[in-house]
Amino acid sequence: MRTTVGIIGAGPAGLLLARLLHRAGIDCVVLESRDREYVERRQRAGILEQGTVDALRACGAGARLGREGLVHHGIELRFEGRRHRVDFPSATGGRSVTVYAQTEMVKDLIALQLDEDGPPLLFGARALAVEKPDSAAPEIRFHHEGRERTLVCAVVAGCDGFHGIARRAVPADRVRTFERDHPYSWLGVLADVPPSCEELIYARHPRGFALHSMRSPRVSRLYLQVPNGTDPAAWPHERIWDELSLRLGVDPDADGGGSWTLERGPITAVSVTPMRSFVQEPMRHGSLFLAGDAAHIVPPTGAKGLNLAVSDVLTLARALIHHHRTGSTELLDGYSATCLRRVWQAERFSSFLTDTLHPRPDQSPFEGRLQVARLDRIATSATASAELAENYVGLPLS
Ligand code: FAS
Ligand code: PHB
Image (cartoon, rainbow, N blue to C red):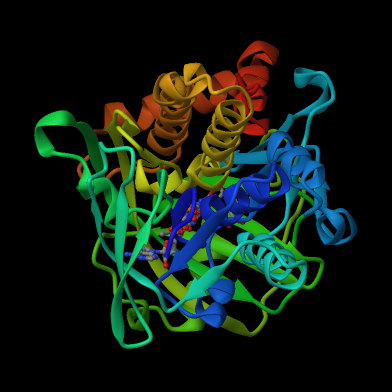
């Protein structure tokens, strides 16, 4: 098989890249190791930055998003029984975020690719290796339908996530990795119950962090900080609801207090995700370009993972299209530096929010007070609140 751009992975990064290249007349092939049902059902992110929404609309993938996406103009912080709303539009010139599950974005992109005669998308095609990545004709060796095959390309896009193989095709002496594991994980819950809030609630409680998000007016998505290695089976559903109610609870007599109750309902999915920060530099090696989780991971606290994957792909697509039209490699040569500047800003923000909202198991009482002081500063300073808002809605694309 031959193509111009071989794309490994049919997650948000690979699917959006295929859509953008196809519309620009650049042929590509997407290789995805899993089957369609698995990819479409895999519970992941829920918040789209304005830039992501704009990009999906611009490439014709925003119809259902426009109908079903929930536009949110702020989030609520809760700590020490207090409540503080961070307003987005007033601090960011009118920008907001949209609640629209990654599963739905993936379904929309797959449907467009398969139904609108898009580029080839092979499910059950597991990439085994990227050969000759620093040549003008790199090859992807992959396993599909019981046999090994080779896809000869001009460019390989490694969009195969943190556990993929593309990143490992770069010689070890040519990369620098930066990583940090956090001493806690998130227990994620999907529940068939209307959300008990209009906007997301991020809570710092001495027992641990909790987040109340949503998927629709009828489905709630909630998270609890748990120790690493937690077995979901150790959390019966009543225990989950009890702990969420405790950590998200408010003090009627505190700032912004009032009364608030967490509605309970049938839990349909429980999973545990470790918190990880990771960056591999550079994001390019010869004809191999890494995008999304294949190159970097952020803890999900700042809702940046999916949105970073999108901004990498917008940068890569623009560079490939520029080269296709002019022959110039200028944007391709600048790809890694352009992406990494935004990646590190997302790592900075995600680390700040994660460190502020999650009591660490071994932290000192002093560090606990610092976390409360940081939140108090955001709750009492328009400047600090605006800084959070600017980062949450997404920094401008370069
Ligand atoms: P993805 O991992 O989504 O996609 C990579 C694709 O490549 C997958 O379909 C995989 O099957 C395929 N693949 C892997 N190896 C392959 C091979 N050898 N051959 C062929 N295909 C291969 N972000 C948030 O903002 N908020 C969240 O709440 C959140 N929760 C998350 C929970 C979990 C468990 C994980 C792992 C991540 C979460 N993230 C969250 C981050 C997540 O949304 C990612 O940022 C996003 O999926 C990145 O998209 P991709 O880069 O396309 O990678
Ligand atoms: C989600 O809805 O899955 C979600 C929302 C905000 C986050 C992380 C996850 O920061």
